[in-house]
Length: 169
Image 1 (spheres, rainbow, N blue to C red):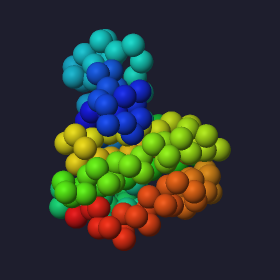
Image 2: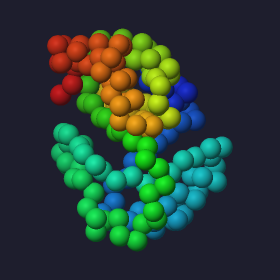
Image 3: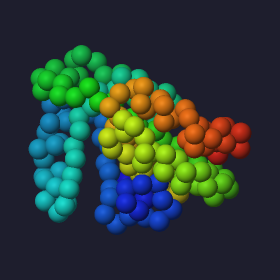
């Protein structure tokens, strides 16, 4: 997926920030992919890269009509010990084309608040389809810090506007 300028939530695309999210059935498949030629090629060309292996603790909604199920104990058999208690959050929105500009008016203020959010360790705006199929990926020190950002100030105003004006389908 592509990203906004600087990895953020900008209307201007970034030529240097991209992301890929892959859902595996088990740890062995994830390990094979991470050690495979595609990942090696990307890392070889990158100035900086990050790979994280995460488990699904909870999910709401669907991604391309697929629901992400919580990770089972069997899926993580053989995986390395947990090295972080950080919380990764993935959100996705399919924006109505006729409402895209109204939706994007809320992004700059939410981005400024996110840049200053206590406990946010990493945040990227990603998109499958420019301006219309958006995803955010963020890593938080703890759930309380994530909730403090998500349900206050500019982000809360954006959430309220999204429901009121039906930005998403």
